[in-house]
Structures are given as C-alpha cells and as structure tokens.
Image (tube, rainbow, N blue to C red):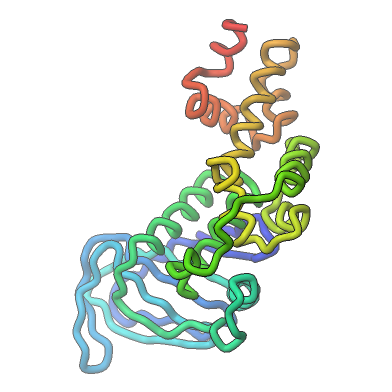
Length: 266
C-alpha cells in the first residue's frame, strides 16, 4: 500500500509486509528510511546476525540496494525521500553541496526520525486531510534532521519574523485559507527559506505554521456556523478542511466542542 503526500517534494510513505526468507531492496533514485513496525524478527546479512525490534531504523541512500534473510514475516514503514528535497534543505541550511548526502546505516535508534515517520503514516492513512502544508513541514523537518538538523539551532537566526514579514504571511494565509497552502509558497511570501520560516514563524506566533493555519480555519468555521445557515459540510470546505469530519476533529481539539455544539452555543 503506497500513497504520496500532496507536495512537490514527492515524499512517499508506505507499509511493507514481507513473508520471511530472502528480503531485498532494489536500487532506486530515492533515499529510503525504513522503520521496523512489527513484532521482533531475527535475521542475518552475510555473516552478521541481528534482531529487529519495533523502532529500529535503516537508512538506504539513493542508488543503494540491500539483501538479507529474515526468519519470519515482518512489517516495516518505508519513507522515500527524493534527493532534490535533501539538496534543497541543505542549501537552505547553508550547508555545502557535498553535505546533501546520506550514509548507509542499519538498526539506528532515533526517536525524532521515528516520530516523523509515524506522523507521515498517520497522514497517509487519513488521506492527507491536512494537505500540502503539513506534509511539506514533515518532509523538511525529516530532511533537516537527517542532515544534522540538531545543529540547526546554533546557526538559525535568533529573532522571529519582522512585522512586515509576519503581516505578509498571515494576510496570505487569511486570503487563501480555503485552499491548499504550501510551506514553500509561504516561505516565498516571507522572503525566507522554508526551514527558516518554520523556526521564525513559531518564534513570532508561538505556533508551528501548520498549527496556526488549523486555528485560523477553526475560527473561520466557527464564524460561519454561528452567523450563517450553511450546511456543516459546506462550512468545512469554505474553511479549508478536507471534509466535515476533518473539521469536527480539529474543532474538538482546538475548541473542545463539536460543530453542532458551536452552532447551538452561537
């Protein structure tokens, strides 16, 4: 089962089931991050024996292949990342071009990579209801971390957005709230790289970009529910939500109330 995030980065995530025996990855143009997602399984690669447990991570750089043997069926979550995303993020971080590459690693433990992979999988299973902006944010965060993003705070600007930058970005969000906002477009509006926009926007508003957008969409939906007789399904679309149930989930999380409760209270 495979799905693409709706983004120009073409980040791809899928669940891979293997029946046991000989397991392999053929060479592909993308970098691959594999997270073991099932029960523990024993295996061997050449003379090396191993035991995969949930959360073990393998990193296979673009163009690499691998073959090993597993004693039982296994399940893993595989994220495909195009080298173009890694190169773009390296450039935004001010890294030299030769840093935009990955080393092959096996049975790595990294809670940050695992968290992002599961967040991508949750989006995939839900049909990417949060659209391009959230998928872009996850992709950029994963690329930055793989490049050594834990050092980003040492070189990132300490200030937030300037007032004109913040006004341009928030005005653009308000004007295009019902559309599929992208991190790349908002960064262009601010005149910053995507990674710097993420850092400085949160410093200025106290919220990540995608979470700020969710709050603004909830606020618009609340206003439409209270002031109009529009059907809840139409309110969801007018406010930029993927569908009515997506609006209801976000409204419960932000307001602690359902759309019908909001309408009655209004």
